[in-house]
Length: 304
Image 1 (tube, helix red, strand yellow):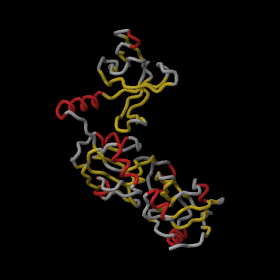
Image 2: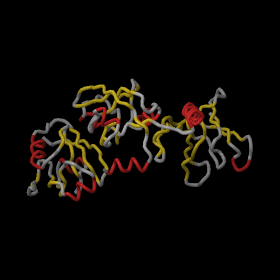
Image 3: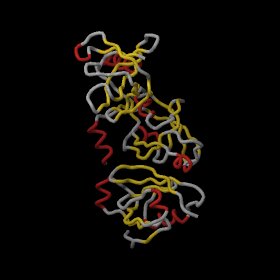
C-alpha cells in the first residue's frame, strides 16, 4: 500500500508505504464518510494525494491525520475512491452534494444488550431516539428497534448505518430490517435529505407520588415540567436516588430519566413499578434512559 504525497513540505513526487488497518471508519467530524484507516505516513501537504494498492490502482484520496505531534506519527485516513467519484459526479451534475438521511440516533449493541433483545450475536444499530418529522418516524421505526439490514446489506456495527444511508439518493425508497420485540420486521422508508447542523439541533431539542424504592434499589419520581422542557420529554420517570442493587449494577445514576423498560414505554411512576414487578429474573432486559439530554439503552438484569 502506498500514498503519493501532494508535495509534503514542498517535495514533489514523494511516495510512502504502509498497510490498511481498517475500512469504514467513522470520525467525530464526519460520520457519513467510510474512511480507510492506514499507517501510511501522511505529512502536511499530503491532503488530496492518491492512496494506491499494490496493483497501482487508486483506492482512496488522502484526507486527514490524527496526530499529537503534527507530523506523520499518528493514524491516517483516506476517502474511498468510489465515494470521491460519487461526490465529483454530484458536483458536476448539480453543483452541490446531497446525502441520504434516516433521522435516528443510534448506539452500538453490546453482548448484554444483544441478549436482552433476542439477538444471537452483538450486531446492528440500536435506535435510541427517532427524530420528529423524520423519514424514520414516517416509516414507523421505533425506539428500541435494532436495525440489522438496509436494502439487504447487513449492519454489523452501528457505525456502518450512516455510511449506507448517506449513499442513498434522497427520495429513494429503502427496505429496513429491524428486530422488534424478538421478531424480525421489514419496513419501507423513503430516505430524506440530510438537514444542516442547525436544523438537526432543532429536531433533537425539541400526578405526583411520594418516592418509593423499587426492587431495583432506586427511587423514582414523576418528571417535573422543567425536565420535560429541558430535555424535550413527553414521558418517563426521574431517578432521584440510586442504592446498591440491580439499578446501580446497570449503571443508573441520579438524574437519569427512564423512558422505556423491557419494550414498554414508561408513562407514570405507578406503571414503572408494575413493569419492574413483571421483569424476568433469568435474563437481561433493555432499559432506555435519557442522561443529560442524550438517549441510550443499557442492559438491566434483575437479581433472582
